[in-house]
Length: 180
Image 1 (tube, rainbow, N blue to C red):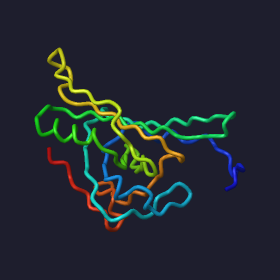
Image 2 (cartoon, helix red, strand yellow):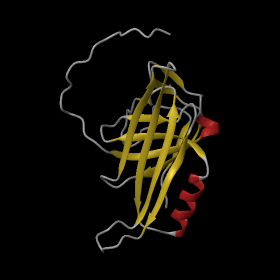
Image 3 (tube, rainbow, N blue to C red):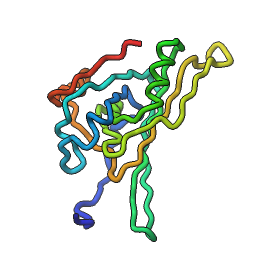
């Protein structure tokens, strides 16, 4: 593998926006280390189901932080996804509790219609989970969950050809819509 610089960067147009629309969870045992990847883009995925979690506006984020050690010759990326879900119920609490106990591969659909795959090699796990009734009448009543993954490579990108069905380009992937 070459570590040589292959291109420079120009100043980008100001056309991107922040935030995420939805996250999708897939079983680690099904999706980890099974995609076709070229130049940090996944072009095919394993056959299996992913579960959709739609997010209200301004309630989710995806960040990725690179950590390097000159002394040890290492680099890795911490992928963090924070998502909030309005409304408390026993069904939602139970489902989120189960998710907190496992390891998954997670996809983020951002507001620029990019699809990012997190935890591809080592999975993402829940590192924080908050249930809040709020204090004032205008406060959020619901759940906030944080997923964290530590990966050798940056999150892989996948092309979205239809924003209403972001996995249509990947044969064999069934999206299970949110129902709680």
